[in-house]
Image (cartoon, rainbow, N blue to C red; front, top):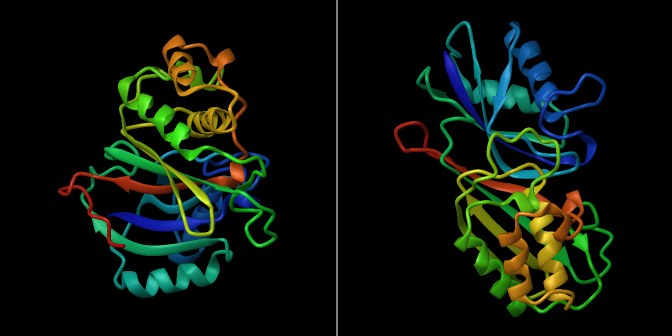
Length: 252
């Protein structure tokens, strides 16, 4: 019997989602908790990788159980009791056996937060960047992302991507009343470190290092050496994973 889990996590203590032999990961922590609770070996498959220190406001994973879970609600409650406080399970739903958390996903969304001042309460969940940024220039540059589908300029070297082609559906900066900036980007897929590299380069547009047109040229060049250093991991959150309605509908 296959189940989808909706969850969220603070990635500060983990080497990312994916299981590693010598460092704690979200995947292995979740597997250990579910295996203990269900009294059977459980392997969990996630919607995709998140890197070291990256968070998830919303994440989806699946696992198979040898027997149907009689009371998913109670199982969810017990699992949250077993898991550390930085991982929260939000729902547990039976799905078709061919439903796949990674391969069935059609869109993913990330958000990146930039705070313009020192704040001891958000230092682990935002990039505290003190140089004034021109949001209009950053949005003008971000709009060019929708014109392209090859993002080699933001692809990490030696990441073994079969292709650097992505279809970006949204790329936009917003600012809340406290001046905190949020970059939202939605696409059918993302390359490893792509979002952080895009954010770092867009911030350089906002501070005046590049014009929006120069940013467009960086994307068009397909040259990683021309993009800026990646933004710090702690400001990045996976915020949505979308599936066809016949596969899975978000519960939250």
